[in-house]
Figure 1: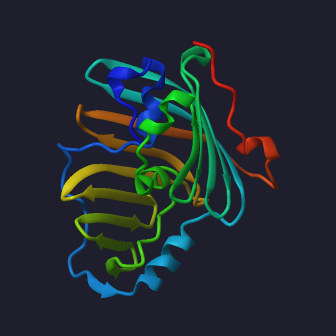
Figure 2: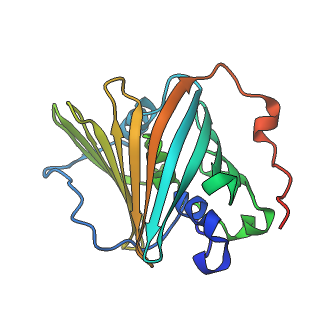
Length: 239
């Protein structure tokens, strides 16, 4: 999602980039293997479903945002209700710059501060990839894939848009996702996993202007359920 950087408080910049769409540049080529072969959308749907956790999760993380103006960081929380509902909260240093949103599937149900909701433009593959989760392609997509013992790659093309995933297995497991809209690169996410298969860290790189957001997960626990108020829009913060 995009919040125009020039129009929001500094403390909210990481929230905007967590769900951003921007034209990324300066990245090396996507490490796609050669020899991708056509596949059915249903195959891609099954693979994407396999990347989701099997139960509700409660994740805590530290974030670090950096652009040409400097760096800032803070802490955040993600509450994931399977299959695809997320409440996330972010706060800057000393609790400043709080932001929250409720995303379900490919829809931002609400985001707070309220005045920024209509400015949010979701780019869901990048958002979900930061949690180590792939999104299934649109039903009319052209799908290609290749699977080797150590690498699985997928390419989804719908009109002029392309989403690519590379999942590497082994000692250093990672998921790489890249999105291009109308031929322009939106950004790339690289998420690394621990031996238990849970995400350890994630990095989102975008440009326009160039920026980077790093998440370091320090808690990822199973959650039986979340209270009903989890999904309710919080009261607007006083300005």
